[in-house]
Length: 159
Image (cartoon, rainbow, N blue to C red):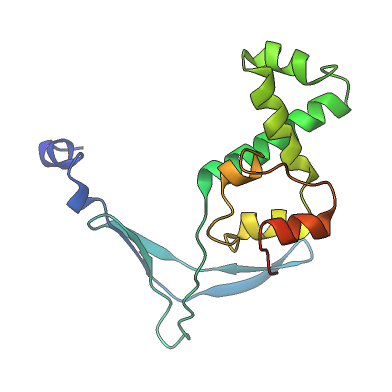
């Protein structure tokens, strides 16, 4: 790393990343699966990421918004539930003690494992409604019902 790189690291205008294909895509079979390899070149430019499709390919714009704190917390919820299911910890209180967290917070996060599978998939794909955020899912605005149809109505979810 040279001196100009370290001095401009904190400058937001230089953080944009541009991803462009640097060769022809190749497709091959590997262990019974079809694999596509697309050589890319990555360049930093300003403050956003841009993926440029190969020449001649149709450009499809997606409107997904990944809520990373929500996705991380959802992953944490399923990990913690696995610890309880396997008997590594007995309950949410012991889990909270083990990770030095508030028991109430652990319980709120664990309730996220009761979400309908299509709601979880939409969150992971970034297709959830805008108002469906971590605050809403942890049951702070309204208690999240166990019934999946009621969850869809509560969160105004349309799959």
